[in-house]
Image (cartoon, rainbow, N blue to C red; front, side):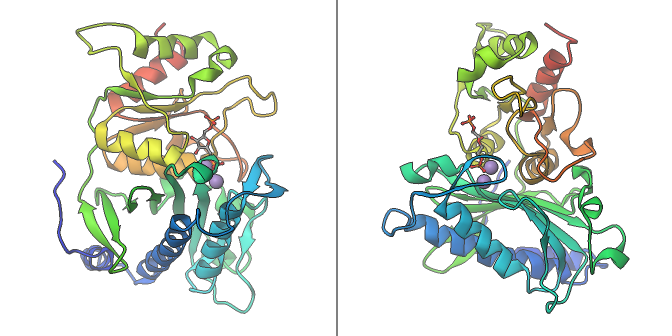
Length: 344
Ligand code: AHG
Ligand code: MN
Ligand code: MN
């Protein structure tokens, strides 16, 4: 059951966790602390997005062939500029940058790798709907490489993440993260007048089964029959299994995921035939699926590509896309049984 914690700041929480781990050097604490500053800066900018000339397109197209809006670029720059100087990272990877982001030669390097989607749900910026930042943190396997890491050092399966989480800039700003290994998933809400994140959602557990399905159903004609059968299952009337489920789709992965994490349910972005260049769906393995998969798993949920765990996929490219089924464990296992053809 979720408890309301009063007055515990995220810094206190991180330090408490660090004390429980005798091997911790504090490097990781520094990293998370700086990421929180970046989150606060982005949050402030999102909140005034309607007031200043920060809305609208830049006219540029990002590496994923999508329109880049100004706030995406702003968020990207804030994270890079804040994180590059702390001495704990050997490189970064962002949805907005085609290549690895290197740490400038005059800054010290560390053993961690930060992968992120600086602004998720960017089509919702202009219309005051929740958006977010998603991040996953890895450790470089061969620390001799930290001076000059290659893409090989970065392409680790999601199971290797040492931490992952997200910020949501919504009716309030919330940061949710986990460091895995049974330490739990915790949520912190930004108290704007104090400028601190306070523990608001201690040890989040996702219900084993939900009542919500989240998918962009307008793509039904791009789906194969297995995917169609799965979505039909959630819509079919059946008293015993409390169907139909209810549909909720914000169009910001981070917001759809967060709602389902708290309430239970499944988010799906299946493979589709919409764009022959992207036959594996839209979402990115490294900066979207893996971090949320780690959060889901640590909260008792599950994430699959329809055939097996997202976290077990060996990536082949930084901007690789995957089909994603994520949320309540029973719902995702059911989705897997449809997509892998064990059930129809
Ligand atoms: P981003 O804004 O980082 O490019 O991500 C957008 C993603 C994700 O947030 C959301 O779930 C999905 O796009 C929505 O896509 P559709 O409009 O195709 O449903
Ligand atoms: Mn995104
Ligand atoms: Mn994005």
